[in-house]
Amino acid sequence: MRGMDRQTGKLFSYASPESLVPQDHPLRAIRLLVNAALDRLSPAFAELYSDAGRPSIAPEKLLRALLLQALFSVRSERQLMQQITYNMLFRWFIGLAMDVPVWDVTVFTKNRDRLLEGDIACAFLTAILADPQVKPLLSTEHFSVDGTLIEAWASMKSFRPKDGNGEPPAPGRNGERDFRGERRSNETHASTTDPDAKLFRKAAGQAAKLCHMGHVLMENRNGLVVDTTTTTATGTAEREAAIAMVEEFPGGERITLGTDKAYDTQDFVAEMRRLGVTPHVTQNTKSRRSAIDGRTTRHAGYPISLRIRKRIEEVFGWMKTVGGLRKTRHRGTARVGWMFTFVAAAYNLVRLPKLLAGAA
Image (cartoon, rainbow, N blue to C red; front, side, top):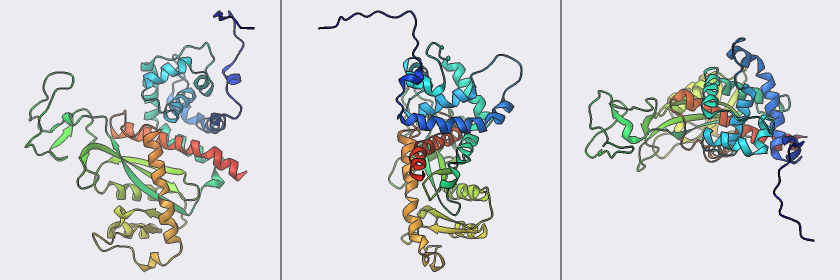
């Protein structure tokens, strides 16, 4: 018997978002890890908010919503608010009932900035790694480091002389600008919309772009991110960031650090050895004499570190394609760095359920 196409709504609904999510959905395992990390961050949240005044968006809900934005490649916070309105999976993950109104996007953005001021992204990454289930998965001896370019949210037309001279763009929303015959450099020019962004060319023959530079320190046992930092894009930023992250690394044990050819300089290798770090640096023998000699290459662990180091390219690939960091939506090194660290934490959360299942 054919059913009737009756489109009538019920006055009351007793279904909850929890009942609509399959028991084997990947987000269930991720949500358990997220909730445990947010519980550890509760004292840090308390320091950011006043005891008086109107209640703001709960920081726990705000961070879960930002995680969804990274995990599902939502392009903007405005689109994120739209999806939370009708997506029951998103409501369940965040902790919103089906009939709770969604926040205004400007309110959401303002509350997110409060977490930026408190450096919650770094604390969130640390809280995930501090989980008793996660600690046994981390290596304490072998690490890799690398940097990647993050294209700035700034037009090349905004790269103007610092002294205020220069021809302005033509009138209009996207007015034309002729750069022919004009010499531009980071010493004489700066972006008017993102002064922290620097003009940088990744390799000879490629176009120079306004960029920031993100750096990741990865442990080699399971390829999890243990530290991040963001700097302005310069030719020495990768080595300087690597030294800074190693100096802040807890413990006095000797470790190995795998890197690519860009780190093969006398100064960097000497600084690593001074810090008690064995530099497993890929030798750059084509353009200059390598700073790595037989003291390092004779060990069996050296080629192994170089192979495992390539995992860090998978980290950057995920952060840019899924996490949306190919071209950042934020301006300023601090804001870009906050999101860079947060997306790195999201990458760990994607990998951890499978690693924990294998360890069990």
